[in-house]
Structure formats: C-alpha cells, structure tokens
Image (cartoon, rainbow, N blue to C red):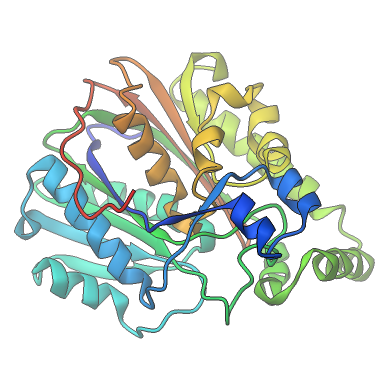
Length: 338
C-alpha cells in the first residue's frame, strides 16, 4: 500500500544492561555450539517485571527527541509479546504520559507488533492529519517463563523497549509504502513454542508436517516474504539495489539471510544485523531500535531508502519502506542505560 504525507518524526529507546555471550558461556547458560551458530555478542537483560515501563521510557525519549508534548498525541499504541504482569498495560502507558484524550490500545502481533503498530498509526493519521501518533514496543523474558539463551530457535531473546513517533505535519522521513500478509494455517506453531528447546521444536515441526502434509513451513514463510518484500518495493518503483539500509529483526545470520537478505540479494553489511547481534531479539521492538541506531550513528542521508522488515509468529509479516527527507540530528538521549 502506498502512503502520502505520512512522516516519521522521531525514535526512542530504553535498553537495560547488556550481558556478554562470553559471560553466559562461562556460566553454562548457553552451549558453545549454539553461541557460535547465533553469532550474538551481547544480550540486554533486566530484572524489571513490567515490559510497559520500558516502553514508557522509550516513549518519553521519542517525545523529547521531537520536542513534542504528550498532550499532542491523538493515538498511542503499545505492543508486546508473551506473558505480562499488567492486565491493562496500554492504560499504564497512557497514565504515565498524561495523555488521557489520545486513542490508546494494546496491539498483539507477536514479534511483528511494532510493524503492525506502524501500519495502524499510518491509517490513523490518514484520517486525522492534525494529530501525532506514537507506537511503542517492549518485551521482557523472565527466566521462569522462557530460557532466553536456549528457548527460541535461531535467536537469543532480550529485554528492552522502543518507540516511533509519526505525524502528518513534520518529520525526517516519509513513509513510502507498506506490505502485509499472514499465513494463519501456521498458527499452531505459536501455541507452545515458548516452552520448547530446539530439539522439541524440531520434533513438533516433523509431526506438523506429517499431520498436515504441508510443505516445510520455512518455505511457506519464505514465499510469503519474497512476495511481500517485492510488493513493497514495487509501490515505489525501485528494486533492492536502491536500498541504503535494511533493518532486520535480531536472529542468527542464517535465519536473517534465508528470510530477508537472500530474497533481496543483500549482504549482511547492507543490513542492521551487526547492530542487532549486540542486543538480542526484543520481540516487536527490533525495527524501531534498528532505525534509532542508524540515527545515532549518523548513517542516514537525504534521499536514502530504508526498508524495515517484520516477521512474527502466527505467522504474519509487515514491511515498511521509508525515504529520508533530511538528516535526523541525534539529541541528548534520556532513559537509556547503554
């Protein structure tokens, strides 16, 4: 879908202290073989019990970076993944920001939540051009719920929060296009995945294939990703050679390559994988963190095309193509530990 006059004003983040993979190896939390396969150097971890608190800190960061008041918000979205200790986290965020008049809701789309929130915010702004829309994303993975080091195939799970502020009035980038699709017949894989290690996951995969007769689920996902990645670029009449950066979720390079880089013909140097391996996979927060990283590193220039790709359990995928209008200037970051 092509968009007109939908702009990105600012990003925000909050990341707790990072644990080095070498320290996890020394403590016996992760086997050497798995550490080598994943390639992660650090993973952000916290003892915080409420993911929405990290989203709130990231929200304040984004608002400060754009010099926007919470009272200017017409939409406030919160997205997370997994279990949580608060039954109405969106209203926690709304109270903390003192934005009672904003439309406010929680959105659940697994690790695709941030990108789905961006899509919802774009639709909101198309109907209400006078407002500002803030999408927040956060995740925590307490050890009693998930073994972050070995509990998820192809990735190490991490804690943190991010935010994206969108507007019709001003911004450093325009939202050119989005593409979205789902493969709901694969939702069964999400029912018990959080409690599985790699061996259990592979056993479930073999049983699923035997029961349903479907081709390997990775191939179904790959075909859907290939189609949607090409579709979002076609909306702007460009190909992957025009991309200055591609923001990918944090995972082992083999996974990022298979799902995203290979279909687009990208090397890892043209993606944010090297940054993502320093944080771990923070559920729906990865894409906004990747954009925030490019801003802080001053790697964005006018005319640059940046593709943010999203994939979440269920399975659903949303991709967003943006173009830089003017170089965003990094401001003093707040609520950030590292």
